Length: 150
View: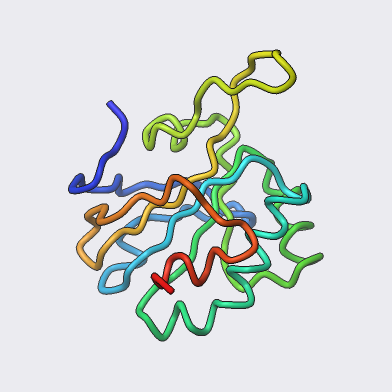
């Protein structure tokens, strides 16, 4: 069963771009914008990451930390972070375990071909680790403002 609003987020989130284990408790007392995206260095994912980068200070002022997740490798994430000067960590969910827990690893369709892929969604988690909102229709170029409710 996928994680829903009101559910406790899992404690272990995965390994970041440096191989460091990231836990929910690392963000205790802060809100967390946990965003799932399909692939590093694609146009929509780059627009989304850059929107979060550009709005990062406003997000932090509102009490949020930002954490991205895709199935790309740690090495891919390192390049993506360096290329776009991202101030937040990215989880390398190469086995898609976290994506499955959150229900964002799903069947997609492009040009009539069906395949498994990552749904672009953001989970807003409160200071106690409870999911308080799920943004299912992400505006990639304006995602920071979308999280802040502007």
